[in-house]
Image 1 (cartoon, rainbow, N blue to C red):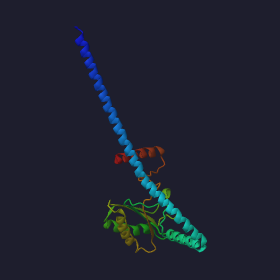
Image 2: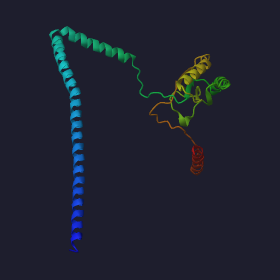
Image 3: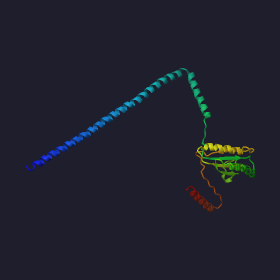
Image 4: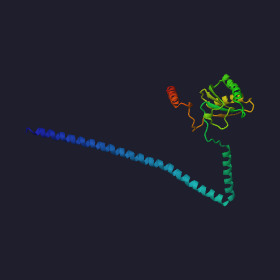
Amino acid sequence: MVFLPYFLIRFLFGSIVEWVGKLIMGLVLGVIWIFARVLKWIWLGIQWLLRIPMWLSGQLLSLFSQVYQRVLSGFLSSPIWVVSVVALCFWGLWILSTNLDSELLPEIHQSEITFEVSLPIGTPIEVTDSTMSQVERAIVDNKQFIRSVIVSIGYDVTNMQRSDEGEHSTKFKLLLEPSRNPKWTEDQVIERVRGYLAPIPDVDFRVLRPVLFSSQTPIEVEITGNDLESLREVSDRATGILRQLLS
């Protein structure tokens, strides 16, 4: 009789825990079932929605096939139409090809312009210097949009880039001020410098801009001499100075 309450309490507690466990398990299974049904209906809705564009694309392809067969049959039955369409295509291709700009190395606008100026071949370096100095003074006196001017008169035997360079050659390298529209700024400066060069008799010049895929480096330092040790020392010193400037 003493152990009866203990076994009774144990039986009741075990029954309650078992029923609560089954209830929780049923709730979990019910939620999973509802979630699976919702996913199923969502997937069926997506499939139904996908059928609409597939049906439309099928109808369009069928219509295009019918129209294409009729047009092709009509063209083949009348060769004059085939010849006319081919001629029209070639005419359009010719129009586009003649109006299409083509550049192997397209120019870019980086606020940098170079004028390569040539006087008549045989002009002494003194005459070239005197003539181009006047152009240089005109550029410096009106430096609107221009940050700096680099002038090279004559030529360097160790650094000739063109076969027609000589004492009659001059290069003006203009570095412009940064702007929101560099192309417009470059055009303004080019027109102004052309006005300085136009009065010079028999002058020939061309305008160069940086190009893509160019092998020219941004900074070039050339050191010449006969003593290798001195050249190595000076080149190391120049490298150190450039590193300090870049840092």
